[in-house]
Amino acid sequence: MATVTATKTSGPIEVERKRPYVLVFAILAVVTLVELSVYSLGLPRLETIAILVILATIKASLVVAYYMHLKYEPRWIALIPLGGLALVAVLVAALTSTSAHP
Amino acid sequence: MEQTEPAGHEEEHHGSPWPVIIAVGMGVGYVGIVSPSIPILVLGLVIFAGGAGGWIHQDMQRPSSAFYGVAAAVESRFPRVSARKLAIWLFLATEIMFFSAIIGASWTLRLRTTTPGLAFEGPWAQPGEILNVPLTGLNTFILICSSLTMVEALAAAERGDQRKLRLFLLGTLLLGMTFVGIQAFEYQKLYFGEGLTFKSAPLGVNPLYGPTFYAQTGVHGSHVTAGVLAMAYTTRKAFKGGFTKEHHEAVELVGLYWHFVDVVWIFLFTIVYLI
Image: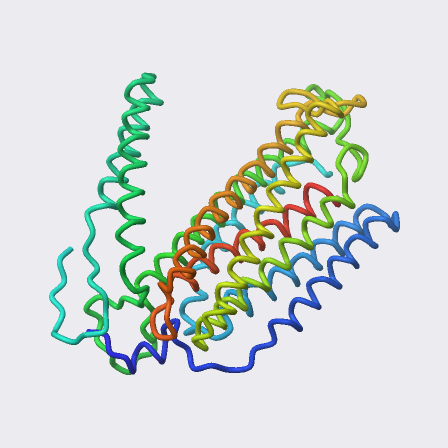
């Protein structure tokens, strides 16, 4: 049986807090510019791939944590996307073990 | 399906026949595709459209509040989460696997067919050789802007600020439409101008470059399009006063989907365009 009190603790009617949405946006915009700079620098291929994948992971983590509110949700919710990512890790491991180099 | 709620209870009634009708329509449609039979497919689409229309009409009339089923409000290591929010996260987990399969398959084809050997038909295109990276960089920025307006719309809903809720939802909708429009423009240029088709690629590039490009960006573009449709509905409901400070869960749920599509694009932009 739902109550208003429970809704306020874990539902969308979260107690209002100051959240760094604009700061996250600024970081995302700057990192995107850095990505385009790395792309145009002509660094060695493996270094380029490594830097760009790290930057993309940083951007995705910020969106998930702050815009998708995973940082503010009960922690067990994170197990759901992590479960999907675990299967992705299996897929990547399987593909890289049977594929040639890029 | 039926829930009996005490008088004065704030939670909305949860039962609705329309999702079942939508599912029946999809089932009939799939039978039409597999058979294959155009009349059965059309029948499925008609049932689907009728179910979707009925569900939208019904949802437009009622508040958008969190639903906890029969879960008790007790202290626990696993605090309660709205059933719909839980369902969206489960759906997004399946989407992670779906996109991983598409991207993984494309990456595997790239590795195997561009390595000199029996299946070698040409190298992969260099970044920027065929695709318009600056234009897509702009599109990436537009999608990031739409994520900001989406999360600000939710913040406005939580404050009960109707004007900003409508403004930010409308902004998100327009930015999403702009993203899809730019992608359509890019497709048109690539397909008819550059000769990057579903079966081939220009400049001696491996012919698999075309289909893998359209598969990865196409499924993402279709997700953005679905998000735009959902955003259009949410915006319409907001302009009709359908969300309040207490009842606005749909804004959060459509936002979760929208941000997820942004996350997917962050990786696709890197994998397809930059490396």
